[in-house]
Length: 274
Image (cartoon, rainbow, N blue to C red; front, side, top):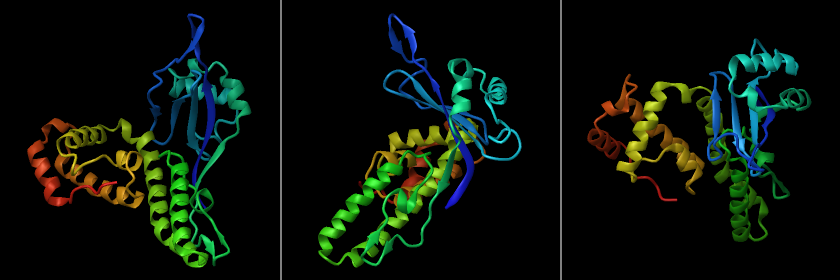
Protein backbone atom coordinates (compact mmCIF):
# COMPACT_ATOMS: atom_id res chain seq x y z
CA UNK A 1 0.00 0.00 0.00
CA UNK A 2 1.47 3.34 -1.07
CA UNK A 3 -0.17 6.29 0.69
CA UNK A 4 -0.53 9.47 -1.35
CA UNK A 5 0.01 11.62 1.72
CA UNK A 6 -3.07 13.67 0.82
CA UNK A 7 -6.61 13.30 2.11
CA UNK A 8 -10.02 14.59 1.15
CA UNK A 9 -13.16 15.97 2.76
CA UNK A 10 -16.58 16.21 1.13
CA UNK A 11 -18.80 19.30 1.30
CA UNK A 12 -22.02 20.20 -0.53
CA UNK A 13 -23.39 22.98 -2.71
CA UNK A 14 -27.18 22.60 -2.39
CA UNK A 15 -29.57 23.26 -5.27
CA UNK A 16 -30.62 26.85 -5.80
CA UNK A 17 -34.35 27.53 -5.61
CA UNK A 18 -36.16 29.50 -8.28
CA UNK A 19 -39.56 29.41 -9.96
CA UNK A 20 -40.62 26.88 -7.37
CA UNK A 21 -38.07 24.29 -8.46
CA UNK A 22 -34.50 23.29 -7.73
CA UNK A 23 -31.78 24.28 -10.17
CA UNK A 24 -28.01 23.98 -10.38
CA UNK A 25 -25.98 26.83 -8.93
CA UNK A 26 -23.08 26.10 -11.32
CA UNK A 27 -22.91 24.74 -14.87
CA UNK A 28 -23.93 21.07 -14.45
CA UNK A 29 -22.27 19.68 -17.58
CA UNK A 30 -18.74 20.27 -16.37
CA UNK A 31 -16.14 19.22 -13.83
CA UNK A 32 -15.39 22.34 -11.78
CA UNK A 33 -11.81 22.61 -10.52
CA UNK A 34 -10.23 25.22 -8.26
CA UNK A 35 -6.52 24.38 -8.81
CA UNK A 36 -4.05 25.70 -6.26
CA UNK A 37 -0.80 23.91 -7.09
CA UNK A 38 -0.30 21.45 -4.25
CA UNK A 39 -4.01 21.14 -3.45
CA UNK A 40 -7.44 21.80 -4.95
CA UNK A 41 -11.22 21.72 -4.70
CA UNK A 42 -13.48 20.08 -7.24
CA UNK A 43 -17.26 20.08 -7.66
CA UNK A 44 -19.30 17.36 -9.38
CA UNK A 45 -23.03 17.66 -10.16
CA UNK A 46 -25.68 15.36 -8.70
CA UNK A 47 -28.99 14.59 -10.38
CA UNK A 48 -31.18 16.56 -7.94
CA UNK A 49 -29.31 19.84 -8.51
CA UNK A 50 -26.65 19.77 -5.81
CA UNK A 51 -22.88 19.50 -6.22
CA UNK A 52 -20.51 17.36 -4.20
CA UNK A 53 -17.48 19.49 -3.40
CA UNK A 54 -14.28 17.67 -2.50
CA UNK A 55 -11.35 19.41 -0.86
CA UNK A 56 -8.00 17.66 -1.44
CA UNK A 57 -5.14 18.66 0.85
CA UNK A 58 -1.96 17.20 2.31
CA UNK A 59 -2.90 15.22 5.39
CA UNK A 60 -0.05 16.54 7.54
CA UNK A 61 2.53 19.29 7.45
CA UNK A 62 2.59 23.03 7.06
CA UNK A 63 -0.45 25.10 6.18
CA UNK A 64 -2.53 24.33 4.28
CA UNK A 65 -3.07 20.76 5.37
CA UNK A 66 -5.83 18.95 7.20
CA UNK A 67 -3.58 19.01 10.26
CA UNK A 68 -3.54 22.83 10.09
CA UNK A 69 -7.34 23.01 9.62
CA UNK A 70 -8.65 21.04 12.60
CA UNK A 71 -12.14 22.53 12.59
CA UNK A 72 -14.58 24.57 10.54
CA UNK A 73 -13.46 27.89 11.99
CA UNK A 74 -9.91 27.39 10.70
CA UNK A 75 -11.21 25.92 7.44
CA UNK A 76 -13.62 28.80 6.79
CA UNK A 77 -10.80 31.33 7.18
CA UNK A 78 -8.75 29.28 4.72
CA UNK A 79 -11.63 29.18 2.22
CA UNK A 80 -12.20 32.92 2.50
CA UNK A 81 -8.56 33.39 1.51
CA UNK A 82 -8.14 30.64 -1.11
CA UNK A 83 -11.65 29.87 -2.39
CA UNK A 84 -13.61 33.10 -1.83
CA UNK A 85 -16.06 32.43 -4.69
CA UNK A 86 -16.77 28.88 -3.50
CA UNK A 87 -17.42 29.43 0.20
CA UNK A 88 -20.71 31.40 -0.23
CA UNK A 89 -22.12 28.46 -2.23
CA UNK A 90 -21.77 26.09 0.76
CA UNK A 91 -24.28 27.32 3.38
CA UNK A 92 -23.73 24.30 5.62
CA UNK A 93 -19.97 24.64 5.48
CA UNK A 94 -19.40 24.45 9.24
CA UNK A 95 -21.71 21.45 9.70
CA UNK A 96 -20.22 19.60 6.70
CA UNK A 97 -16.62 20.30 7.64
CA UNK A 98 -16.96 19.32 11.28
CA UNK A 99 -19.07 16.20 10.70
CA UNK A 100 -17.45 14.70 7.61
CA UNK A 101 -14.27 12.65 8.14
CA UNK A 102 -11.02 13.10 6.25
CA UNK A 103 -10.73 10.30 3.71
CA UNK A 104 -7.47 8.58 2.87
CA UNK A 105 -5.93 8.13 -0.58
CA UNK A 106 -3.64 5.21 -1.38
CA UNK A 107 -2.54 2.95 -4.22
CA UNK A 108 -2.39 -0.81 -3.66
CA UNK A 109 0.41 -2.79 -5.29
CA UNK A 110 0.57 -6.56 -4.76
CA UNK A 111 3.22 -8.93 -6.05
CA UNK A 112 0.78 -11.82 -6.12
CA UNK A 113 -2.95 -11.76 -6.80
CA UNK A 114 -3.69 -15.50 -6.52
CA UNK A 115 -3.10 -18.52 -4.31
CA UNK A 116 -2.55 -21.39 -6.71
CA UNK A 117 -5.99 -22.25 -8.07
CA UNK A 118 -7.81 -21.74 -4.79
CA UNK A 119 -8.25 -17.98 -4.49
CA UNK A 120 -7.87 -14.88 -6.62
CA UNK A 121 -8.04 -11.15 -5.91
CA UNK A 122 -9.62 -8.87 -8.53
CA UNK A 123 -10.63 -5.23 -8.70
CA UNK A 124 -9.73 -2.99 -5.79
CA UNK A 125 -8.71 -6.00 -3.70
CA UNK A 126 -5.79 -6.51 -6.10
CA UNK A 127 -5.04 -2.99 -7.35
CA UNK A 128 -6.91 -0.14 -5.62
CA UNK A 129 -6.10 3.27 -7.11
CA UNK A 130 -6.67 6.93 -6.30
CA UNK A 131 -9.85 8.39 -7.87
CA UNK A 132 -8.44 11.07 -10.14
CA UNK A 133 -9.07 9.30 -13.45
CA UNK A 134 -12.50 7.92 -12.54
CA UNK A 135 -11.47 4.44 -13.71
CA UNK A 136 -11.38 2.30 -10.56
CA UNK A 137 -14.75 0.63 -11.11
CA UNK A 138 -14.21 0.27 -14.84
CA UNK A 139 -10.86 -1.40 -14.22
CA UNK A 140 -12.60 -3.89 -11.94
CA UNK A 141 -15.24 -4.59 -14.59
CA UNK A 142 -12.48 -5.22 -17.12
CA UNK A 143 -11.01 -7.73 -14.66
CA UNK A 144 -14.26 -9.68 -14.55
CA UNK A 145 -14.50 -9.88 -18.35
CA UNK A 146 -10.90 -11.06 -18.68
CA UNK A 147 -11.35 -13.60 -15.87
CA UNK A 148 -14.59 -14.96 -17.30
CA UNK A 149 -12.93 -15.50 -20.69
CA UNK A 150 -9.94 -17.27 -19.13
CA UNK A 151 -12.10 -19.53 -16.99
CA UNK A 152 -14.21 -20.45 -20.02
CA UNK A 153 -11.05 -21.44 -21.89
CA UNK A 154 -9.33 -23.26 -19.02
CA UNK A 155 -12.06 -25.58 -17.84
CA UNK A 156 -11.05 -26.91 -14.43
CA UNK A 157 -7.46 -25.63 -14.54
CA UNK A 158 -8.03 -22.57 -12.36
CA UNK A 159 -4.37 -22.33 -11.30
CA UNK A 160 -3.24 -21.59 -14.85
CA UNK A 161 -6.20 -19.29 -15.43
CA UNK A 162 -5.44 -17.27 -12.30
CA UNK A 163 -1.76 -16.97 -13.16
CA UNK A 164 -2.56 -15.90 -16.71
CA UNK A 165 -5.10 -13.39 -15.40
CA UNK A 166 -2.45 -11.65 -13.32
CA UNK A 167 0.04 -11.76 -16.19
CA UNK A 168 -2.27 -10.00 -18.63
CA UNK A 169 -4.05 -7.63 -16.23
CA UNK A 170 -1.27 -6.40 -13.96
CA UNK A 171 0.42 -4.17 -16.60
CA UNK A 172 -2.90 -2.42 -17.23
CA UNK A 173 -3.61 -2.08 -13.49
CA UNK A 174 -0.18 -0.55 -12.95
CA UNK A 175 -0.71 1.79 -15.90
CA UNK A 176 -4.05 3.19 -14.72
CA UNK A 177 -2.64 3.56 -11.20
CA UNK A 178 0.17 5.70 -12.65
CA UNK A 179 -2.19 7.75 -14.81
CA UNK A 180 -4.52 8.37 -11.88
CA UNK A 181 -1.62 9.76 -9.85
CA UNK A 182 -0.51 11.93 -12.77
CA UNK A 183 -4.06 13.24 -13.19
CA UNK A 184 -4.03 14.55 -9.63
CA UNK A 185 -1.04 16.73 -10.46
CA UNK A 186 -2.69 17.75 -13.73
CA UNK A 187 -5.94 18.77 -12.04
CA UNK A 188 -4.47 20.66 -9.11
CA UNK A 189 -1.53 22.28 -10.91
CA UNK A 190 -1.12 21.82 -14.67
CA UNK A 191 -4.54 23.19 -15.68
CA UNK A 192 -3.31 26.63 -14.60
CA UNK A 193 0.02 26.35 -16.50
CA UNK A 194 0.16 28.25 -19.84
CA UNK A 195 2.52 25.70 -21.44
CA UNK A 196 0.21 22.83 -20.49
CA UNK A 197 -2.77 24.72 -21.92
CA UNK A 198 -0.84 25.31 -25.15
CA UNK A 199 -0.15 21.56 -25.39
CA UNK A 200 -3.87 20.91 -24.92
CA UNK A 201 -4.74 23.39 -27.66
CA UNK A 202 -2.18 21.93 -30.06
CA UNK A 203 -3.35 18.41 -29.26
CA UNK A 204 -6.96 19.35 -30.00
CA UNK A 205 -5.94 20.77 -33.38
CA UNK A 206 -4.01 17.60 -34.22
CA UNK A 207 -6.85 15.34 -33.09
CA UNK A 208 -9.03 17.06 -35.67
CA UNK A 209 -6.35 17.11 -38.37
CA UNK A 210 -4.85 13.61 -37.94
CA UNK A 211 -7.25 11.45 -35.91
CA UNK A 212 -5.40 8.39 -37.18
CA UNK A 213 -2.25 9.44 -35.30
CA UNK A 214 -3.33 11.59 -32.36
CA UNK A 215 -5.88 11.20 -29.60
CA UNK A 216 -5.57 12.80 -26.17
CA UNK A 217 -4.60 10.29 -23.50
CA UNK A 218 -7.73 11.02 -21.50
CA UNK A 219 -9.86 10.06 -24.49
CA UNK A 220 -7.78 6.92 -25.09
CA UNK A 221 -8.51 5.87 -21.52
CA UNK A 222 -12.13 6.94 -21.25
CA UNK A 223 -13.67 6.55 -24.70
CA UNK A 224 -11.95 3.52 -26.21
CA UNK A 225 -11.47 -0.14 -25.28
CA UNK A 226 -7.70 0.12 -25.71
CA UNK A 227 -5.63 -1.29 -22.84
CA UNK A 228 -4.52 1.14 -20.14
CA UNK A 229 -0.88 0.18 -20.72
CA UNK A 230 -1.20 1.18 -24.37
CA UNK A 231 -2.81 4.50 -23.44
CA UNK A 232 -0.01 5.26 -20.98
CA UNK A 233 2.81 4.59 -23.45
CA UNK A 234 1.08 6.24 -26.40
CA UNK A 235 0.27 9.25 -24.26
CA UNK A 236 3.90 9.62 -23.22
CA UNK A 237 5.09 9.40 -26.83
CA UNK A 238 2.54 11.95 -28.00
CA UNK A 239 3.36 14.32 -25.16
CA UNK A 240 7.05 14.19 -26.04
CA UNK A 241 6.25 15.25 -29.61
CA UNK A 242 3.95 18.06 -28.46
CA UNK A 243 6.70 19.38 -26.20
CA UNK A 244 9.20 19.13 -29.06
CA UNK A 245 6.90 21.11 -31.34
CA UNK A 246 6.16 23.84 -28.80
CA UNK A 247 9.61 24.19 -27.31
CA UNK A 248 9.42 27.01 -24.79
CA UNK A 249 6.42 28.63 -26.46
CA UNK A 250 3.07 28.92 -24.70
CA UNK A 251 1.23 29.73 -27.92
CA UNK A 252 -0.02 26.75 -29.94
CA UNK A 253 -0.68 29.01 -32.92
CA UNK A 254 3.07 29.37 -33.48
CA UNK A 255 3.29 25.70 -34.50
CA UNK A 256 3.13 24.81 -38.20
CA UNK A 257 0.37 22.18 -38.28
CA UNK A 258 1.61 20.67 -41.55
CA UNK A 259 5.04 20.13 -39.99
CA UNK A 260 3.39 18.76 -36.83
CA UNK A 261 1.37 16.30 -38.90
CA UNK A 262 4.50 15.14 -40.71
CA UNK A 263 6.35 14.67 -37.43
CA UNK A 264 3.59 12.60 -35.86
CA UNK A 265 3.19 10.40 -38.92
CA UNK A 266 6.93 9.79 -39.18
CA UNK A 267 7.51 9.21 -35.45
CA UNK A 268 4.46 7.16 -34.48
CA UNK A 269 2.45 4.34 -36.03
CA UNK A 270 -1.28 4.87 -36.53
CA UNK A 271 -3.38 4.53 -33.38
CA UNK A 272 -4.50 1.05 -32.52
CA UNK A 273 -8.19 0.31 -32.87
CA UNK A 274 -10.25 -0.41 -29.79
